[in-house]
Structure formats: structure tokens, C-alpha cells
Image (cartoon, rainbow, N blue to C red; front, side):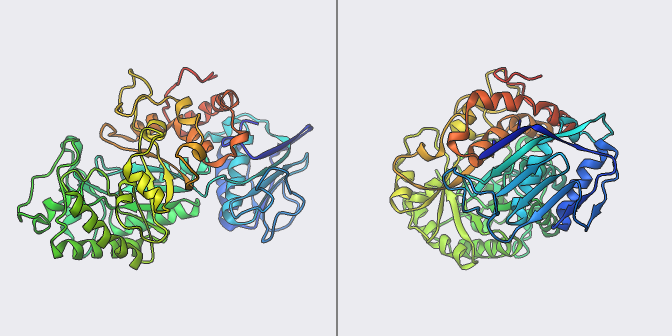
Length: 493
């Protein structure tokens, strides 16, 4: 079975094969999932695949409110079946996917799609047969937070591009999209109380292009689309540094009251909000309140990295006033790990982006204060790093990141001690990324590698087995229209 992420438990039955036939039906306890699966299967098979309400369908999608009966496992920690767990049972007559929640059922459907031939991802009719190997899969995630970040500030990408990115994340059971919505080069979300943030601050990007921003309606559309695929949006407003676009729109946020020109380069660390200005905190509070109202997810990300033009004293003063503003919206504070220097707000999450297993003083402070940790080690999962010296786009300050580099590490042992690791996130910064094709090139095939790091139990992960499984996914990505990097360590067909 060439499933990615590798499931916690697989019990094959070589004597059994299920074949999807032209008269097959789908029954689903989830109205969305029944139609979702049928919409994916109809184009390549040419079958009608009606979604029915009567039992006995060829594909059954079953929600179970209690622990999944008869599917207990000896694998440590799986027997309690958390919300995202699922089982897939394949007999000669039917495929039955069971989940405790719609999220678990959705992930079981992703596994089913990967068990079918790769041509199932085509959008035109293909030759069959449409077979699934017999047996049973019992699966659950290792970490609750499995995400990717897309920097839409340095280069702007429209809602349709983001929807396709959500689709690709969800197909590999990733459940968070972190959007870097503001930086020196552009402000990307409309704020009613400060309208020039979008119209003026959003009208630039790296290289001098037109930039752009999301209206509140567009953002809400993306939130709903992602939620249907069990992907949570985490919006980030980076501060107190990385704010040139905001200062351009509202010079009163600048200590000297002068609006700097729009910035289209890639340097960092030259801008700051005034920690001693009352207007700064009015601005921050109103932006966070509007963003929280748009975002049903539990997190607001307030950046906090590379504030090189903010004195250490001002940085602490700023963060100690801003973090409670996040809590007041009902959201949890997330910040890059430099936030560890400031006072700890209850439940705070420090996102570690260091490129060494030996954390710096800020990360050590976060650990000492009991912060929960989101792991984004730059030399492992930064998708904007080049694969090798010949990669046509990307950076290399954290080194070259091959698929094996992205895959071959254990989140539980990256940092000293036993930190409260909530998950793994792969950031994709866009200094050199201008098109959707650029996103695809840097994300694939490393994104599925990170997905397996975050989802699968460590004992089930093995590089030789993974590279063999990954190779079979290349044709799927071709059907998706993804131009991926042909990493030479992978035996592509």
C-alpha cells in the first residue's frame, strides 16, 4: 500500500481485492463527503456513482460517535481513537470507511483515494480496473497540528491559488494553513478601521508588482472552503517589525510621522512600530479584533521575529501589551520563538524556526516558561530553501533541503528536554516565488514528507520505504497539474 502518510496499522489481506464497478453507489453519513468523493471519482471512472441513503453501497462512509468497535490496536496510544482517527476495511464486496468525526472520515477518504490507481486523480475518463487491495487500516495522527505556511505578503496569490493549496494540503492529511498576511512588502487583508492598510499597504510586492489584498468576503470564502476540508486558517500579522507596508499606509504609526516609500526588496529588520505610541496599541487592538471576528479557528499569530530595529526593552514592552489583546479576542497567542523573551500568556505557542537542534536564548526562555511548541526547523522544513545548488528558485541560508532532509528527523527529539510539541509546520516564504508553479515546485515532493513526519508514529516511518511509496505519487501530481522537483534520491517511475 503506497499510502502517505503511512498509517499506524495496516493488516493486508492478499486474498481479497475490491473492484469499483459501473453500477457502484456511495452511502455517506456526511452529506459533504459523499458528494466530495463522488465528484473526485466520476471524471476518471466515467461512472455515475450516485450517493444513496440505503445501506449496502459499494463504498460506505460511516460516522461513529463512540470508539470504533472491533478496531482496537496494540500500537501504543491508538486504542483511544481521538477525533481524527479512522479505519478503512476492504472486502471483495465493499470498502467501508469509519471515523469518529467528520475529520476522521475525511482522512479515511484520502487514504481510500490513495489505495486506488493513480489515474483516479485524472480529470478525464481513464481505463480501469478500479481496484483496492483487501485488508484493514487503523490510523490516527501523531500530532494535532499539521500545517504549512504560505507567505502572501512578499508575493500576493489570489483566493483560487490558495484553494488549490488547501486541496493539496488536505490530500495529505494536513490540517492547518498559516497565512503570513503582512510584511514590509505588502499588507494583504482588509481592515475596516484602517482601510489604507489594504489599498495603500497592499499595492506593492517584491520586485515592484501590483500586489493585492483579500477583501473580508474573500477571506471568509477561503475560511469556509478550508473548513470543509478540515483545514484551519491561522492568520499572521507580523509585528513589531516587518511593518513597512503599514507605515506607508499610516505614517502616524511611525515615530517620526513620515510615511516611508513602498518597499519591494527582500531585506529584513529595518522597520518597527513605536512601542511608546498610544496609537500603536489602538491600531493593533482594532486589527486583531477584526481578524479574530473573521477567523473561527483558535489561533492568532503575531509574528515577533527579526525585530532588529526595535530595542530589546521596546520589544518586551510591546509584546507584553499585545499578547493580552490576543487573549481578549478569545484566541490563543502564536508567535515566532523570539516571543519567548516576553511574558508568557496562558496557552501561548512558540513557533521554533531555528536551523539547528541547539535552540537560541529566546527558544530556551520559551521552553523554560512552559510554552507549547510548534516545530518549523528551517534546515528541515523551510520549503523556500533550494533542493540543491541548481534549483531555479529558492534561498539557501538554512542549507539545501532534499526530500530526505525534510523527512529524516523526529520532532520528539529535536529540542532538549520534553517540550510540549503540538505539531509541525512547513513555511514557504516567497521572496523568489512569483507563480503557482513556483509554489508547486518547492512544495512537492517535500510537503508529503513533512506530512508523514507530523502524522505517522515514529516506529512506522522508514526512509527506504517512504522513498518507494513517494515515487508512486509522482503520476498523481502530474494529473493534478503539479510540476514537482524530481529529487534524484526518489525512484520515480
